[in-house]
Length: 130
Image 1 (cartoon, rainbow, N blue to C red):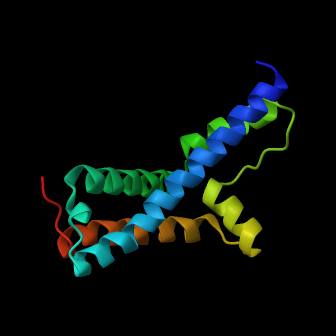
Image 2 (cartoon, rainbow, N blue to C red):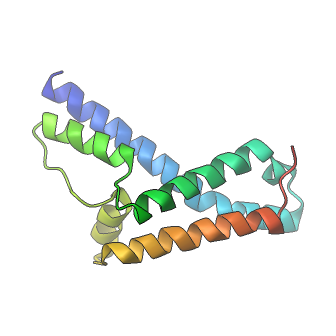
C-alpha cells in the first residue's frame, strides 16, 4: 500500500469514527426528546440495541485500558503514510485538541461509564419496541 492510499484510508477511518461518536453521543438526547414528543422511531429495538452495544463496548474498552480498534487502525495507516500518529484514545486526543483540556485516563473511563449508564437508563425512560 502506498503512502497516499494509506493517508486516504486513515482519513476515511477518521470520518467514520467521527460518525460513530456523533451517533453514540447525539442519539441519547434525541431518544429522550423523542420519548417526550412521541417520536415513533426512538422506540426502534434494533437502533437502541446498536446504540447500547456500542456504548457498552466503548466503556468496556476504557475499563480494560484498550484503545478503540478504529483508533488503532487509523494510527497504523497514518504511520504507513509517514504521518504523525497520536497515542491516546480518539476522544481524548480530539477533546484535548479542540478544548485544550488535559485529563488522566480515569476521567475518560468515568465519562464513558457514566454515559453508558445513561444510555442503559434511557431503555427504562423510553422503552424500545421490537
